[in-house]
Image (cartoon, rainbow, N blue to C red; front, side, top):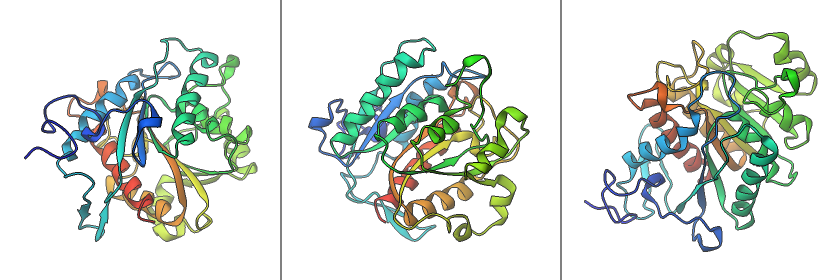
Length: 311
């Protein structure tokens, strides 16, 4: 069976995300959701390779490219249909120079995301390292939003030596600059130093659910502090998942969410709030020859977008 959304089977042809049309210019995008890749890992502090994340997720997404048109999937485990009527386009990648110069890369990222927003598209951004979240949020133009972060690290690190825009600092940069009026973190774990600024984050009102705590707490309680219908942007660092199911990432930590735990929490956020965009970052296929990290990342994107468009 050849799906209606493409001219070839999922395993053949050009691997756009979900095998949807490639439309770089949002003026011509008759769609609801736009995929945008940011193949950038110049801001990593550990293992590079996340620049290949967008390509890996696009390849993995073709596993689900068998539906016809915009017919819904049925997820029997939650008893709900998802993505019915939701139109996707793949807007390609932001072309970035291979240099760790945020003064060059950030405006390019912001401009591309801004154009998607200008034309009413819901951006799903494929990273890339986590530093991209800061320039992505800049594109929202200071619109008040609640930043919901899934991560093993707080990313509230004050970098030494003047390096303010690494993948360890997008949350603190976004928060202190007013791009995020509220911040919630789910899944934080591992070992921290003073540079992680845990106390400063708490003083500024960041709500942090440590991973083991989140695993023991009912999902309804984890999202109860989110105002119903408030604008939320979701940033999902794939290392929030346990490395047994997501080994392909630059800075893995023992422990973490299972797929089902992350899915339940993402759906709860999306069904309670008004999600206005999301990113999936730190997928590093160089450390995952079985491609299960990208597979989990894509499925969580579908789960989140599906819930956001059904809310």
